[in-house]
Image (cartoon, rainbow over all chains, first blue to last red; front, side, top):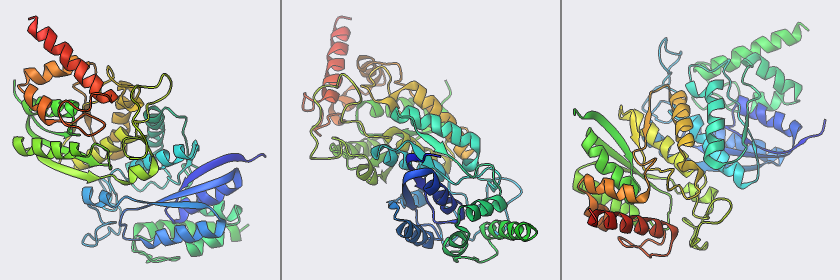
Length: 221
Length: 221
């Protein structure tokens, strides 16, 4: 199949967005990446993003969004707020950063248009959305329309992981030849621990359970 | 009529948003304002916004969005790009900053939710939209839906000037008792000249023609 021309990947340096980067490299001739510095607790993920882009010769831009922290205090950006170990029964978890995906994707779109890119790839997933409203498909669809109206441009927000759970995301990385790179060189842990992570935060639990399930299935053929 | 509780006004310090601030003070018990520093050529407008808020005892926040300039070069933020004197026949004028209103309103929404505010007031106008796609009503409606989905919150974006032309906006300021303050203490000119402005840029022409038409109508009773 002929590759498409070019795309911009919103890259956090975690499992999901790195898997999307692997996917984009198969689908597009030219891949760009953009990351956001919002004073996240797990800032090492920016180093991961940088290293991975370096290895793949992907043009990578990091944008400063630190003022987001000033507006919307939460446990991912404030050292004085402890990360919830489990999702609350009601409402959003305290790791939720208000408006985060909307701002990320809007900045990404402004950047993409400047590069003449229409396809914007993001690793959001409704299957594993953990109570974050801005990971839902309905939000992404609505945002896509709004962006196109805002800039009179035909953006296409592409979400390869929208309906995959973490087990299937590991499977995708494996099929794309990137299981090791995703496992060993990305950061998902809210407490900033590479690879295996702290094991206690919700992001680690989700990532590890998916990995174990996929490995079990793979070994059983 | 009983006033509503509270609202956030997106305040540039120009004619339109200042008129919206006057309007909001009549409609709401408590009014907050937010402005954006994006390295605009007419940065004095931020001083205007600050002074007006000071006079009206309105709580005012200025957010740093200077990275927008890095992403989307245009004549309003780059000293090396000259402002178009007239709107181009096709496409957007070079004073158009990609994604500007979308980013402003998204940040405003994050800030508003933190303050427990649902009503966000912006001075965009489709009647005088000057070719800016992000001033159109269809964009604002779509953005409202997207914001509500992004943050699971019932924002209401209110646009008192949407269907008014500049003449009617002057009339509104006058009825609200603010003709002088808008005329003498706001900044609309792309070249950063207070009050009467440079007279040549599209923003000055629009503002002045509206003022003259309104004054003529008023004098003729």
